[in-house]
Image (tube, rainbow, N blue to C red):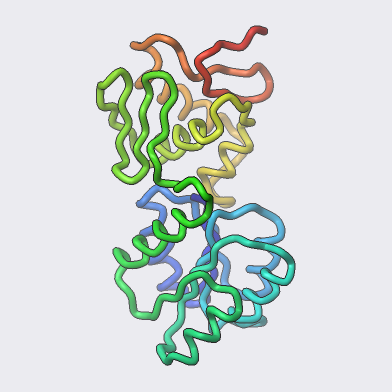
Amino acid sequence: MRILLVEDEPKISAYVKRGLEESGHAVDAVYTGRDALDWAAAAVYDLIILDILLPQVDGLTVCRELRAGRNRTPVLMLTARDTVDDRVSGLDAGADDYLVKPFAMKELLARVRALARRVNEAPKFAMLALADLMLDPSAHRVTRAGKVIQLPAKEFSILEYLLRNAGRVLTRTMIAEHVWNYDSYNQSNVVDVYIRNLRRKMDDLFEPKLIHTICNVGYRLSVEADEN
């Protein structure tokens, strides 16, 4: 998932960002309400983690403005305030869930997974398959022809993205923006390197080949090779 983290306390922001990235998510971190609105308008996110007490524009106002602008990205609100009225205010502003500081990273990750499952009518954590390739997002498990394939977090995220868009051509930029945050990705061959690693593990020893290069464009996951 690509996540926008909006938290003005540097230590909390760094803690949350690290925990999310270690779980395979791409995270852009900003520190003010105004930046939150600007970044949410400039990029597509799967989830926004939003503190309430922010400089410039508070989190409740940010959430209201997002919803007024028809931005339906799930919002998980973070706050140090734990009264019923505070929780109601956050939910009334358009938040999808509410987490009170201090919190354990394990609980935050569980909330993130729960919100991910709600995004589409088809659960995000349902099993994905193409030919004899199987990917289980909830168990972080990949098999090809029944053989378990061990993938690190980034390779797993790329393969999941390809599977969710099987048959569709994905540009290198599309793949990079889904898997890496804005700061860490540059216009190098990083996507090609990761695709090469995936091919070595899940295509080289199997038939049919599933990862196809579309010249000068990007990649497609499909049983059929490109006719060109």
